Length: 218
Image 1 (cartoon, rainbow, N blue to C red):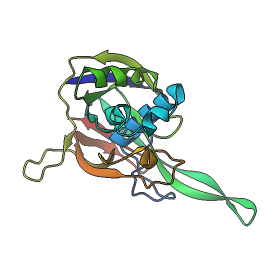
Image 2: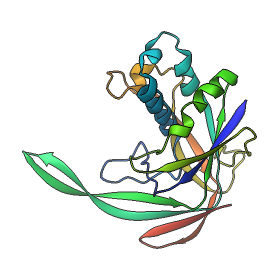
Image 3: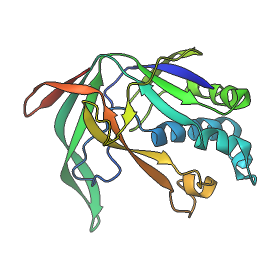
């Protein structure tokens, strides 16, 4: 069973790749499955608490953790390159450290497609998806627009060397099917469990300079 959610980007988006260092971080073009699921957990815990996720074999945890996510993209992306100053405390003094970041302008709405096991999982996710207002870094705002029970076909595909498609490759994180609350809660002692996926972003290079790169959906 599939449904999708349409979000409108209302601010520049930035979500660094998980392998990036703090001082030099390129951004993914769109929110990763891991970041979307973390936003869902954040809403669920904020509204109803985390006790339900602490239960053994929690269905609510599996509804979020195991949902399959894909994307339908359109329009263009403008990746803005910039240097920012990060304040760090050293020897009792705050010192500025220059760091590279990318901030991305998305021209069109983004359709996030969810594949669930049954109607209960769908209803549970839809309790919280319309309440999410940012993905990635805090302040990267998205506005919920609508639910769609007849989603478009996804155009972001997992990389397959035997069936190459035009575009650029990016590595996305997703939650491991073995993850429990202790592996998700940032305040718990458990180690984060993530799966890595290489996806083909269906974009072509249009123009670029030292300050930006412009991509358009194929």
